[in-house]
Image 1: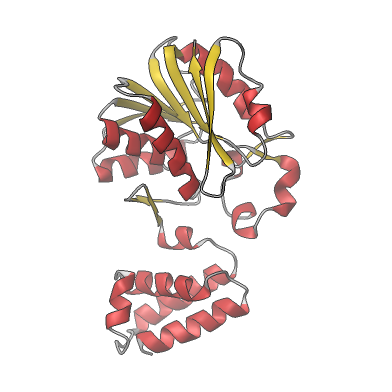
Image 2: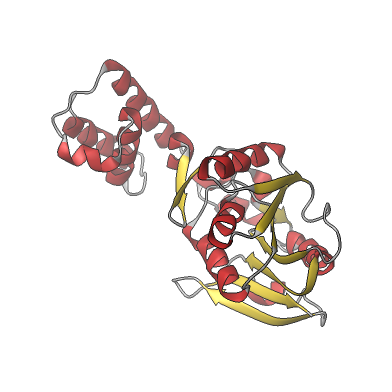
Length: 275
């Protein structure tokens, strides 16, 4: 089997299973099976796959047809120009979350201490450490997620301190200049409507907040109010159609609430400054 044949057959199998962007997915999975970059495939269409390469490729195609996300098969996903390792213990990084980084960098100049609450794979903590040089701490209630995040920090050369705790509960009052967070915000009642790749594979505690979807925001607002120094910022990703409900959680001890839309014009980030 040549690369060209493998791509044709893989694309057909994925299309038959109604997998989106079947050709691109086949290329990514074949490159992973060959331990090559995807661009290598285009210059070597006549390369003959070894038996082991065929076995790996076939297994990857089968897993994707069963709904397993491509990122969990390859174990990697790009975020803010860097490659992060991902496992089913953490959410798959989304491009929309880059707006959290961009908003934080724009609003907070010279922050000495930054906290990433619910760090998952560590994309926010690692990125902000490398982009700002500040002292960065990161928390998660999942020890397995912290292991993934710590591995990403070490591999990318980002000295980040990790703490296993609930939200910001381990930190002293007025100890942080910036808090960032991409919290669980899917209401439990929306589970049936999620794509199977999300519903069946991504960690539930990183997806679902509770009946309303606001439960983590409610707790985060109170915790951030305690941990942020006066004038510090809280920058959070928010769910679709939740801007007004999340903004209403912030008392008069907060000021300069700002909403940032994503490229589709949907409110994606809410930033609030501690009075």
